[in-house]
Amino acid sequence: AIVVSALKEATDENRVALTPGIVSRLVKGNYEVLIEHGAGERAFYPDQAYTDAGAKVVDRTEAIKSATVLAVINRPSDETIDQLSGGQTLLGLLSPLTDPEWIQSVADKKINALSFELLPRTVSRAQTMDVLSSQASVAGYKAALVAAERFSRYFPMMITAAGTAKPAKVLVLGTGVAGLQAIGTAKRLGAVVSGYDVRPASRGEVESLGATFLTTSVSGAGEGGYARALTPEETQQQQDELAGFISDNNIIITTAQVPGRKPPLLVTQKSVDEAKPGTIFVDLAASDLGGNVAGVKPATTVTTPAGAQIIGAGDLASQLPTAASDMFAKNVQAVITDITDNDQLALDVDDDVVGELLATKDGEIISNRLRTAMK
Ligand code: NAD
Image (cartoon, rainbow, N blue to C red):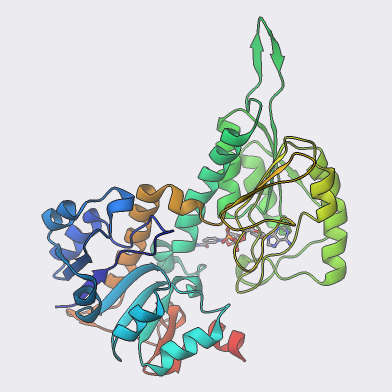
């Protein structure tokens, strides 16, 4: 039988790649499942729940070495990679596009790597495997809550005997999966919400949530429904036009990403400096590569001299770990089922989904997108 393993992630990650619910489905489907001791603890899934679901709870080395498929949330440590042997398969968010050297080293070890960032999202069969969407949806929801919690005023309008409080004004920059969830959640909390995206196609989605769609003179629809990278002149133009919107809002939630690149800077230092005291920036694109807001730091809140807060919130899915793990594990199961043929692993490089999801196989770089990025 195929052995599927999940590990305890690094200490700053609360999610787990397999949940007891998915384990029991896998076990029914004739898979053997190994879970590292404590792997689900931070997502509130104790070892006993995995055992009850039919998994074997084992030490880390056994989970790694016995795996046919090792399912992870984030790229594992070098030490873990060193324990893997050629022919084993690794599945997770491995960030191959932004770190070609690392993925080449995985290929050189003949480890087969499937990376969710490479999923062709427009193919309908891939939708159940779409980790980027499932996790972005969790993060967008949480972004609105984090903003509401930090904000020094109400989100909804409040009419009381002690006066009337105006509703908060929330602006969401980047209205993809995460941005739309943030809009929906902020609306449900009673804020006045507007959304902006460089893809004009997103207007309908924003308006259907009852928010106002803002545009700039820069339009940037790219391939496959994604935004393209803007030229430096377009970026400047966009930043200038966005500045006016930013100073008019209390909460700015930013989610803009361009696949495989550094996130675009949407909020300049000048816009940060001109923000009203008490303004909350929640930057979902914040990572070691940068973010959408000038001065953002990953997983930290920066308070500016003028009294705005910039929250580096690239890790929000991990802050709703049970819901996020449930969806992640479902996506993992969809991939594993797809690459199984008669109880054997079948990694078909010619398949329209698997051939793209595959970063490496048998020492080669497979995904066309990754090959292009590595040229
Ligand atoms: P993403 O996380 O890559 O980026 C978030 C948003 O930022 C996107 O809407 C993008 O257009 C926007 N953005 C990028 N650069 C920007 C800039 N300079 N200024 C303003 N906004 C900028 O995107 P996502 O949430 O993964 O979604 C991207 C697209 O893919 C959307 O059209 C989405 O509906 C689509 N999608 C399709 C499927 C599917 O067909 N199954 C699944 C998921 C997403």
